Amino acid sequence: MKTQSRVRLTSVTGIAALVGTLALSACGSDNNATANPGTSTGATTSAVDCAKGTLNGEGSSAQKNAIEQAITDFQDACTGATLNYNPTGSGAGIKQFIAGQVDFAGSDSALKDAAAAGSTTVEQTAADKTCGSTAWNLPMVTGPIAVAYNVKGVDKLILTPAVTAKIFNGVVTMWNDPAIAAINPGVTLPAEAIKVFFRSDESGTTENFTKYLHTAAASDWPATPGKKWTGKGEGKEKSAGVANAVKSTEGGITYPEWSYAKDNKLGMALIDNGAGPVELTGQTVAKAVAVATQAGSGNNIKLKLDYATKEAGAYPILLVTYEIVCSKAKDPAKAKLVKAFLKSFAAPAEQTKLQGIGYAPLPATVQTKVAAAIDALS
Image 1: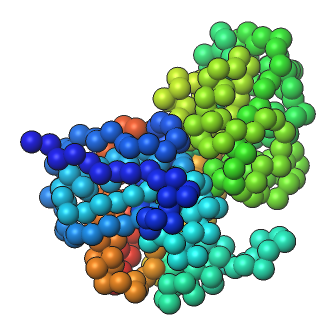
Image 2: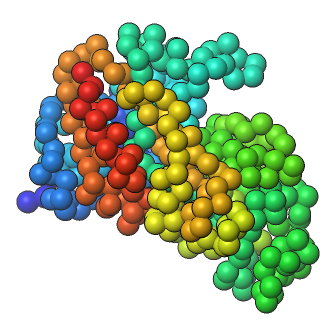
Image 3: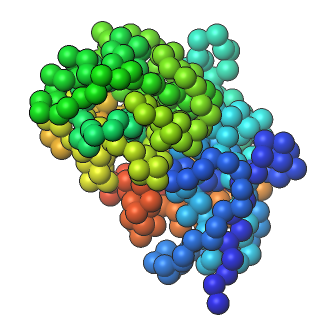
């Protein structure tokens, strides 16, 4: 008989009564609700070293659907474990982790080593202080970012970094603009207004999307990348909010995670970084991650993505969601449970399974580093 999963997505107020766990976001609503139990494949259960107890986490809404799947599979195998995740966004997750309110955070950007403009807080230093040890950033999920659109009659759309930047900063405002037409020969583009939707909450997806625009088209997107949107358009909360807005708006465009674009049956642009148009697939995203370099040291695995890559067949707009954990936990029981869950989450079979719901598996080289870091947790 199938064991019912106990994935709970808690509200912000509920987090005080709880104490955080993890969730991956991509395919579904960001609304807080009890998640439907997933189907256990047995593929990941053989690698699970179960532990009992409760974990609570908060953060990235981009990884919500992925972590729900990972939690369901883990709890099906480990009936004494309960994991809760609140997908409030990367910025909120980091703040809650630093405040000691959750056991781990999910973030689409690694902890910063320098204070952001207008702030005196250095995220890595503050998290280390909370932990009493180094806080590690462990890349767990690769979340492709789609440039998703709803334009009647346009089944295939090619965009370059420069044209994408001009659309999202309000320079190109019509779908039949010559700049779009020039890179889409043979496509009938309508004479209708482009309606841009952006994340109104602090978002790691926004930060990674603007990193792409700033890196690959700096002259057209000179603004400093960040979790707060600085372009044009209409704001909607979370990944589900922007995806739903485009789905219901003719002429709409936004930048959601792949799974949200798939769930809402939105068109997804092919991106030409200079080596030809590339379709968003698990393979093309994994190829882009494979050329990333490690910015962190040792088991603090911060990745530096090359958004301007001209690697043939590499889809360049993506994010990596990190699970942020204490390298040496203050509570041994929680440390054992964190280790067991992350080991299950990072297992090759689980990573492959996530591709079916709109995520790309981590390349083998990154999986090996993550597995070694998880083994070193204490």
